[in-house]
Length: 248
Image 1 (cartoon, one colour):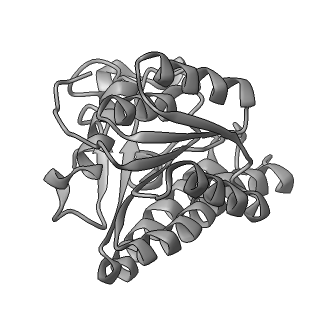
Image 2: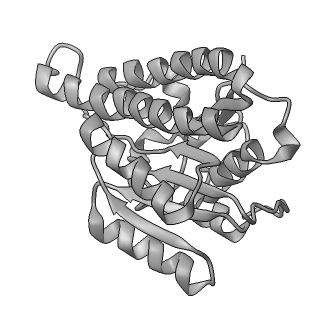
């Protein structure tokens, strides 16, 4: 991971979708910076594994299995985090799913599932955590979107593209409405990341000015920056982390 020194000691972070890939890298980065991290993932084994990684390096972490698309499960998760850490300072919405299908062939169930996790899940977690942050005097929310939702097409991923475009729009509106509560909200839009949930055939190195794939840790560095006081005057932004592919 690039050298970027921050200190989140005394702060508590919730990371959804933290069991693997970008979510895992973010959880580990925040823990290394001193944050207590509440690890959410739909797969309990993955959540436990990342929690143990953090604990083994001397950090504080708690795992919690929940489907963020179900608001009835999100509420207890937020309360469990408050019980465990006493506060919520940082939320990173990294949970996401994708269905590979053409627009013509995509069925309604798959459309709804992608939208439920990627967009509704982001909304549910951010809203319930945001209420806590507002009462506590502020916080930071980072939503993981994608360049696919902003500038670049992603073939056979119509539901994913639509959901991530929604996340970017949601981020901007949240930033506007939550600013008076001292809550900053930004989106990070990765692409071309060498993660286990990315299809390698999609990454065309000749289309990337930097000529290589990115790493989950590089995405995590941007998220860490946005959660820090160094980014205190940044809100409502969608930051691309794609090796320059989406440059105009």
